[in-house]
Amino acid sequence: MITLPDLVETVVKIAFILGLTIGFYAPIIGWIERKQSAVMQDRIGGNRAAILGFTVIGLFHSLADAIKLIFKEDFVPRGAETALHRLAPVISVVPALIAFAVIPFGGTYNLWGHETRLVIADLDVGVLYVFAIASLATYGVVIAGWASNNNWSLLGALRAAAQMFSYEVAMGLTIIGLVMFYQSLSLVEIVDKQENFYHWGIIWHFPAFILFLTCAIAENKRIPFDTPEAESELVAGYFTEYSGMKFIMFWTAEFLEIVTISALCVTLFFGGHQIPFVTVSGLIDFLGFLGPNGANAAAMLIGVAVFIIKLTLLIMLQMSIRWTLPRFRYDQVMKLGWKMILPASLIWIFLVGAGILTGVMPAV
Amino acid sequence: MAITFKKVDRNAKLTLWEASYVPEILRGMSITMRHFLTNMAGLVMELAGGRKHRKIMTLYYPEEDPVIPPSYRGRPALVRRSDGLEKCVACGLCEVICPPHCISIVGAERENGERYPLTYTLDGSRCIFCGLCEEACPKEAIIMSHDWKNLCEYDRSKMIYSKEQLLYPERNLVRRLEAIRGRYFGIKRYKNN
Ligand code: SF4
Ligand code: SF4
Image 1: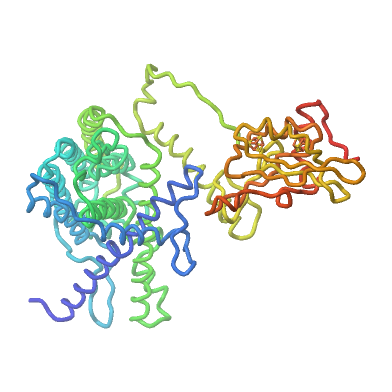
Image 2: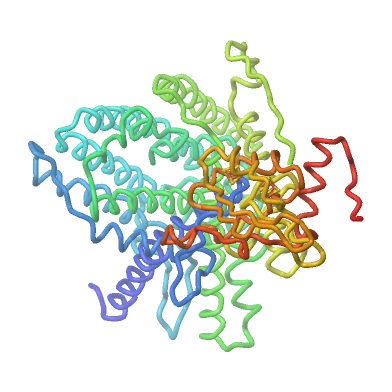
């Protein structure tokens, strides 16, 4: 039975997540990508787009891009499957967005007698849900490549299908150790168990973090794993034939996936909204001078802010990976996935099992 | 910033350490991170009003001007003597040597017998900034100045410079003069006599 406050709460949370991802991160990532890469490579980066003489260190370039692309011709090539060609960008964006439903961006707070848990859907099988949704993204890419009636698009789509499939297997396995450690598939529970700093995923599962991040970047088809869209080989890969708004949607999907990956890493390895050595209840007690509701609201804001800071730092980490490494050759991508990451994650599962059995790893 | 070269052996056998990717990736990322942090610190210090200190070589052009080296060849300029008259003796050597024939001179004589150019026209739209006029001139009367800004016009007729537009006091051309004297005569320092 769903009550009105519950409904309002859910709508507010969904609006917040949509605003955070599409409204805030999608343009900001475009800007971070430009500026961070520029500063890393001893350049300055776009800084000339201005409104009334204000450039805001180049922030308006994202806006200018969006306006430019919106007014471009929406091109569908001859011989393309029109309906599928139109559908593909949507299929790419949606999975990146709905994966956020199970990611907790704050703890549980008691606001005016209403228990608020800052996660849209507290699923028992959150981890599985995320992986299930992530595998849907493959469809968008494959459909885009196939419906475009273009050799390069199809080649890109084939590569993407193989690559995403391979890395999904490995990605699932990298998380198993973590699930064994926390004995839960629910992301909310995993975050709650990281209240103690010494139980953070990154401390006990650093190898899993590296493997997971590698797989996640490969899933997102970004450099160094961007063979599906390798512009020196395949023009632009599976989205060669897209222009205007649909092209933005592919980019948005990619940017949103960066956010999703970062959010997952934060949740699984960096304690979500938790501040090291501070518990949520401790924080609420500490802010007690604001009154019970004020303390809860302040703790909630702090929790969300901490989550966003961690998220942004991980996004910047992904950016610096993207701008540091050269692209793998396609066979190297496959070799890395099947011959190195898969066995490594299996070994890690074994080690975690041994660690839990022998008591080296603490029971949480 | 010095640019260094590194020879890459493409057939190198990777050691196990290198083949395990992660340490080498971290090493690479530490390099890019170092650049990022130094540049960020430099940019922040610059915004805060400090000295420009960063590895970024990009110039904010309309706001910042590049440093022009002494031997730079800008728009040719006629040297004005300290008494306000032109040094040129209207010998016509520059007119002859100029590859695109952009100089035209009408010579005349002053009461004291000095020759001088009555008109001296230099078509800036044809000049190729080769510096041969400067090399040919026996009197150091035409010198490549360091003018490089605002030489473009929407109208070609505006680019035909008259003698008045070309005349520069000698002190404006000292750096270039020093450079060419050093090159042609081995004179290291130019003494203004
Ligand atoms: S620089 Fe070259 S082209 Fe220009 S006026 Fe002198 S000789 Fe002629
Ligand atoms: S070569 Fe020198 S002195 Fe002779 S006309 Fe040209 S500028 Fe005058």
